[in-house]
Image (tube, rainbow, N blue to C red; front, side, top):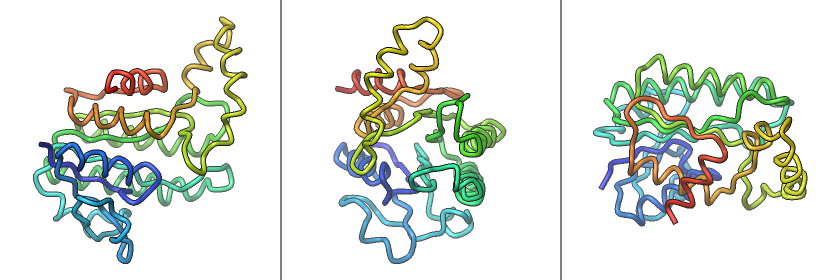
Length: 218
């Protein structure tokens, strides 16, 4: 049984991951804003705090086998460039601080595929987040999806035939694979496997790696 601390635990991926971890017997402490404790998945312990300020929750991290950071602006778009720094990057800075002070054995971070032709501000903020993890010297798993399909997040499904075509062409194959689509179920499965099989050093999972981990997990 692992002790896992999850930020963004009531969000799109966080709630599903927390529920899966608890079902597998892991102890999950789930960070939630005041008033959102009821949205924490069953079987998880709610921790009230502000994801942008490590001081509000660092003391509750405790002995931690894995610290999973999932805070981010919902439905990223170019119009949200400032929020990528004030929310995504600032919350990552706080999470790294809290994880390091708690002596977390493994840090799990959802970044984004890079390089990418669009969403420059979003990619930059997530890349800076990866840099903070490296500088802290944490053992880490970094997942780099481009888009995570799931409830309310299905519009790119229409692009699947385009991806298939681009993967057939030598000049576009690598980019199409790196910027490929993954599902929320695949993300959750890959993160569970990463938590149960932590790395030594920093491990980066691109979209094809995420899908492969999910298949290996069954």
